[in-house]
Length: 132
Image 1 (cartoon, rainbow, N blue to C red):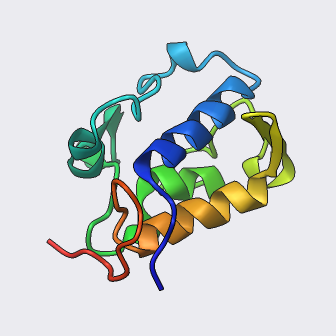
Image 2: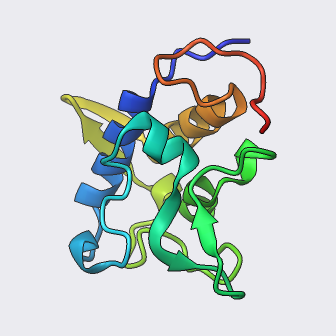
């Protein structure tokens, strides 16, 4: 099944999460890393973040999109990284106001997963998992 989610909607969700964070995201090593082009987001690494081996952490896991770093850290602690946003609140337990509409964090997480599982299209509608 295709998705109606778009990259612009993902960015809006991530902005809402950042705007509602208890801490100042601008002091994090990655800041608002999603405020880049679609190409840079889908092929890039999380700025200023490395894994335990010192390797850059890709934003999207192209082999297993549902394991993408930016999504996994919204769910909870992931590969040694604390849940984001680091100062809270927990995304699944929060409701966000987006364009005047209250959107539960559980819906945001489900929509992000849907976008990832449908090949993370820029403008919506792809239906198969993208592999590189």
